[in-house]
Amino acid sequence: MSPEDRLLTDISIMVDSIEPMDAVESGHIADASAWLCVTEDVFRRTTAPTEPAKHLVSYFLLVDPVTGHILLGDHRKSGLWLPSGGHVEPDENPADTARRECVEELGVEARFHPDLGPRPLFITVNTTRSDRPDPHTDVSLWFVLAHDRQDPLEPDEREYAGVRWWTPAEIRAADPGLFDPHMGRMLDKLKTLGA
Image (cartoon, rainbow, N blue to C red; front, top):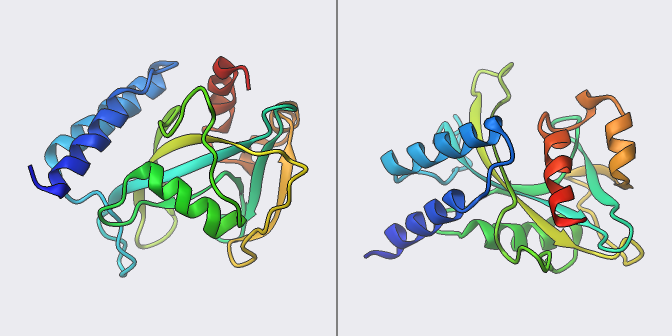
């Protein structure tokens, strides 16, 4: 088996190992699994137009394991408070994307949640930039990382206007339009870890 085929197999196993919490996530797992069976082109390239039109993303929530606070960034391009993360680069394992993006976007080493390790907790499939001439679909694997909110961060100012530690209650009380459309569901799933 070639390294590329091995990586696609590993990604398929990663997707299929996610335990769905609801019918929406079951549908997203089925969509991603079917897509992975029929394509070898899952990695986004930075050329315009966005290619391929459907590609992998690694999101990660930085969670304070003691207080349960969650770090979100005021994302400059989207105007939303989002988890950190980014597009999976060619020949990159999505867990390695989370590691890389944690250093690039927040200036700290990634420490995966001890109950999960380098496995995603959640998956979403979203069409983004639908108001633009080059909309695309993100298949997002959501990882959970542990970080003490008292420890310093070095957020990438090109990516974020700022970052903030939120309690789950603060996120739920805020306008849902400020966040990824699946943030509330992710908070529900995060409770299964006791985080």
